[in-house]
Image 1 (cartoon, rainbow, N blue to C red):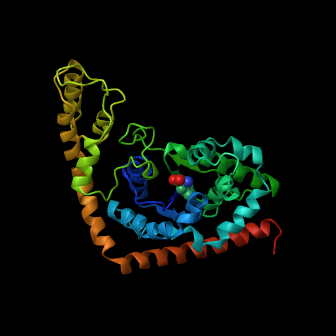
Image 2: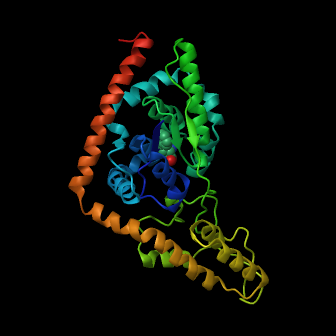
Image 3: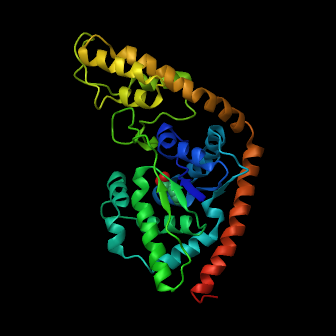
Length: 328
Ligand code: TRP
């Protein structure tokens, strides 16, 4: 087993990242070699003007990894732009993918709407699934822990791997397996589909107690639950979605849900419980994170070592690929 995952450094990581894939990375990583790519080039496909934000967030994201317990003895953390072999492989793969196939990728479709590109789709953005396939396949991993929005990317990666093997008559790339988290996808505090920094509905792993309190206070509940004594809805109520994930005592949740449905339980009571649950979860992460963000030399050394390790593997693997393609 060899694990590879990645994140775009467009902001510090949040609870949605944790529930969706970070947790799985930690669980799977024991005794296993792991790669984490900080996809700064992919980040530029949507944030090309915010290049200094992307640069700054490489540091933030590495602090997040270390704070949640990523072990750098087993994990190679590296920055996409330091591995030019990824750009080479992306170009090789471009011959094997049609424009129509990219247009059908549901994640691309969704994001295209979200960013409002309409008729002005940047080519770099449009082709990023090919570049992500290169991120993955260059390192020959077996398992990719990701959130379920990334499934179309994994599917397309496996198609590209199969096309390459077929085209060059060599079984060089093996299919990779997505590892999904058991917990459902975490909604944003506004009750919208997905927690996301850019939508401003996220709780960051680095948030202070006061910020957590403020954000939980703003959380979407049941808009029709106007007075405490009236029955409230649990389904679609973000506070309960979070309690299901972060409250340890499951019997207590069932009791709370019952009381909320019957009427007599106020939003402020369930929110107070959730604030404590999230604080208990984030406090140790926050504390470690402060230590790491005050140690820039350590962070920069970890990134430098990771880049060097990844580069050596990338160079060896791209040589094999070019040989198969009869390239100099
Ligand atoms: N597209 C991923 C995201 O938005 C980030 C990513 C880039 C990635 N390269 C990767 C994930 C390779 C897994 C494997 O979260």
